[in-house]
Image 1: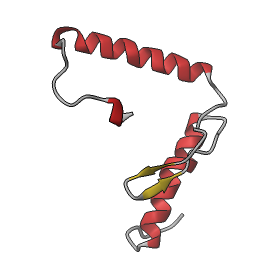
Image 2: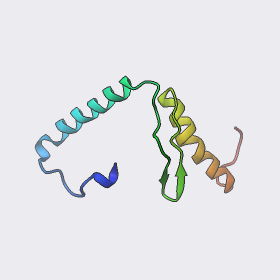
Image 3: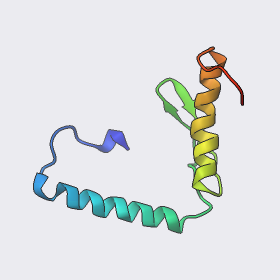
Image 4: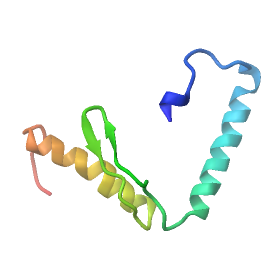
Length: 85
């Protein structure tokens, strides 16, 4: 989404917070209605690293498997993360 954002101060700083809150609430309502559909139809990148977007039933499964686990594995494989599990 970042590529669609314009750089700089909001056009109408007075209403920015209110509009932002309304849009964020809409986003969360849409996500809640889509229970069982967390992911995306294709993978993308986080910097140079491939970021998987496989579909998951729950948001926490998606976040665990597609966001946190790849970062942990990346750090471990480079000796940047030591320890257990």
